[in-house]
Length: 331
Ligand code: NAD
Ligand code: TDX
Image 1: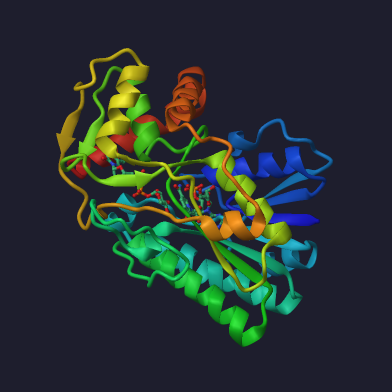
Image 2: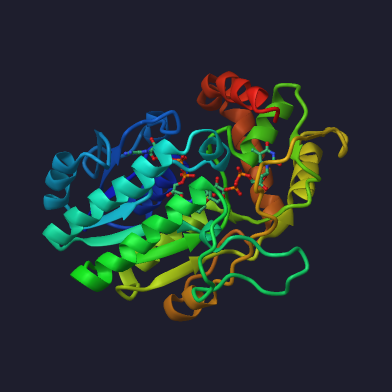
C-alpha cells in the first residue's frame, strides 16, 4: 500500500512511520504542518525510495485532495494534542481536530480511500480511583477538556461519514503513550528533562491521578494491525494494562536518574484534571490477535530516560519556551 500519514512528524506519527518502514513493504508519505509540536528531525535517515515528506495543513482541501488521489490508505494522527494548551487557547484544537478531520473525511469520501482515525481514551472522560471498571468500546462519550471534546467530536464525524456516506474507516482510541521523540511539554519527557537540567519534577495537584501507560511502539503495532486486518466501521481500544499514578512515575524517573525519590514539587492542579484512565483492550487482542511487546513499564521507562539523556540536541531547542509557558500558568 501507499500510505499517507498525517501528523507524521509528531511523537506517535513518527514512531508509526518508522514501524511501517521496518515491519512492512508499504511506502509512506507524511503530511505535516510542522507546528511547534512537529519535528522534521524525528524522521531523519528514513529510506528515500519508500518515504517522502509534504509540509502542509490537513485543513487545506486542495492539497489533501491531491494527496488522497495518490494513496491507497490514510492514517490520521495529526492533531493539537496537549490538554494544557487547549485550556489556554482552544481555537487551534477546533481548527485542526474538527475542521481538519472533516476535510480529510470529505477527501476519503470522494476518493473511496481506506481511512484510519487515531483517537484517545480521553473521549470517555475519567474513572474513580477505586472503580473496578475500565473503558470499553461501549463506554459512553463524556470528554472533559477542550482537547478531548474536539477528539470526541472528530470520532463522531468519522462514525457519521461511515454510516451516511459509506467511508471505509476504522477508529482506535489509545491510552497514554510514552517513549522517545515525545515533546517536552508532556508529563514524562518534561520530568526527565527537568531532572537532566537540574530542575525538580512538577506534579499537578496531589500526584494521585492515574494514567494507563503504553509504549509508542506498541501503539504503532496495533494501528498497523487494525489498518491491515480491522473490520471496517469498527472502533478498537488500544492499551497495555499499564496503570500507574503520576507520583509513582515521577519517583521511578528520579530513581532512574540517581535522585532522592521525594525531590519533586507539587504545583497548581490542571483545571478539570481527569482522575483516572484505564483501557480494556480485549476486543483488539481477541479479534486481531494483537498483544503489546513492552509488558514491563519500568524497563520501557528506563530506555526512555536513556534516550533523553543521549538526545539532548533533539529536545533542548523546545525546553526553555515550554517551561516559560508553564511558568506563566503557575505549573
Ligand atoms: P504530537 O503533538 O506530538 O504531534 C502532532 C503532529 O501533528 C505534529 O507533528 C504537528 O505538526 C502535526 N499537526 C498539527 N496540526 C496539524 C495540521 N493542521 N495539519 C497537519 N499537521 C498538523 O501528538 P502525538 O502525541 O503524537 O499524538 C498523535 C495523535 O495520537 C493525536 O491524534 C492524539 O490525539 C492521539 N493520541 C495521543 C496519545 C498520547 O499519549 N500522546 C494517546 C492517544 C491518542
Ligand atoms: O508537568 C506535568 N505534571 C503533571 O502532573 C504535566 C505536563 C502533567 N502532569 C499530569 C497530568 C496528567 O495526569 O501527568 C498526567 C499526564 O499528563 P499529559 O502528559 O499532559 O497527558 P494527558 O493529559 O494524560 O493526555 C495524554 O494522553 C492522552 C496526551 O497528551 C493526549 O494527547 C492523549 O490523548
